[in-house]
Structure formats: C-alpha cells, structure tokens
Length: 257
Ligand SMILES: N[C@@H](CCC[C@H](N)C(=O)O)C(=O)O
Image 1 (spheres, helix red, strand yellow):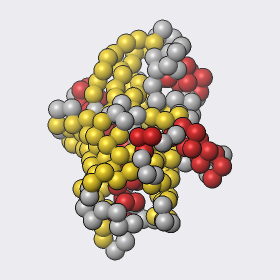
Image 2: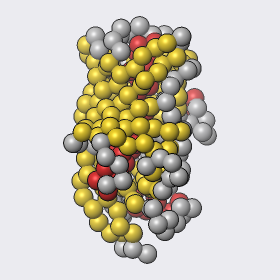
Image 3: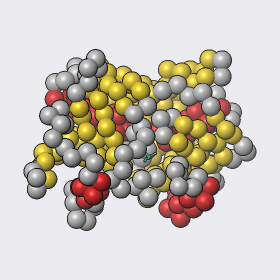
C-alpha cells in the first residue's frame, strides 16, 4: 500500500505526518506505524501523526509513538501538525484542533508555532523531583549538569522501576539562568532519549515555578534540538494560559512503498 507522507521536526523531535482526511490509513496496524518510524528500515521518526476531519474544529490529531502504539498528548507533534494544517490550507494563522486530551488552539507565524496546552491542576513535588501531567505524564528531576548525565540509563530505570507498565516520560533539568533551564528527556513509547519533548518542557517550566526555582512566568528551555519557550499564569493554584512556542519545520515529503 502506497502512503503519501510529510516529515516534520520541532526542535529535533521528528514526526511522520499523514493527511488522513480520506480515512485510508490502517489505524490498528501497530507494526506498520513502528516500521515507518524505524530509523534503519523505515522513514525514521519519534512518532507518527494523522490529520483527520473534525465536525466543528479545523481537524483532529491522532498520535502514535514510534513503538506503533497510540499515546497521550504530544506537544511538539501538536505544533508540527498545526503548521501542516496551515500548509494544507485547512487553517490560516490560527488552528483549532482536537487531540486526545481535548481541544487546542495554535497560532502559526512562519515556522514558529505557539500551542495552547491544557490547564495543569495537580503537581506532586519533593526536594528534587516533581510529577505532573501536561497532556502526557512527566517526571521532572533536577541534576547538577544535564550535559554530562546518563539520560538513557537513568531515564529508562525511572520510567520502568518507578512508573511501571504505564510508564512516564522522564526529564532531567539543570538551571542555567533565572528563567532558563537545560532539559533532556527520556520518552516512553520511543524508549530512548529524544532531542526535545514539548509536553516535557512544559512540565519542567511549571515544576520549576511551582518549586520556586524561578519566579518568571515565561521560561526558556534549551533542549538538545533547539530552544522552546513556555509561558503561563497561575490562578487559585491552577496553571492556565499555558503556551508552548518554538519552531516547527516541514523537512520533506515522500511515499511509503
Ligand atoms: N514528544 C512528545 C511527547 C509524546 C508522548 C510521549 N512519548 C508519551 O507517550 O507520553 C511531546 O513533544 O510532547
């Protein structure tokens, strides 16, 4: 089966995106999705996104991790698919879409996309660790120097030993300025470090504010694949108006044979 696709990256978190408005993609074929995402035998990607029709919004986003399984919200994927909807002419500079965690709004300015994330109501914190859900579950852990940290081994251990079968994404963080943090993430479903994770840096920004590491409500996050910014407000203990902003780039298109 020939499948036309587009390849995107958002700060190095890379995705295959398929226009599935005609509903031809075999959505239950886990092996197919995993094969397409395979970096040696396939196209190669951290995940695959389907753009589908929606009754009242511009489109619906369906997200698979590179292991071929459907998963929870992907922030960088959300930014990339908003850019793709603009490229297809489905949306203009503002895109409204439904993802697994509800409705989202994105603004697209050239190759910069700002995505509104859901409110965050619950954060568990201890001295160096936080856990919160920003559409996907995230463990956030402060380390002395993230550039020299064994993200793969430590991330895999925490993902499996602490969070069990369901797992969580694991973010390691070092503060570099009052409002700036370096972040590296081990992603469940990819089962490896990715160059960037959108819901991950959103979790880091909120966790750093919640624990008093920063007093800024606009935070810069340096990832292995580039720079993202997260802004928010806090009202009655709830994080609202959460925006994730950064580059979303269409890299190439092709046909899966
Ligand atoms: N890279 C994504 C996160 C994707 C979801 C994650 N792998 C999970 O299954 O929880 C992002 O940019 O948010």
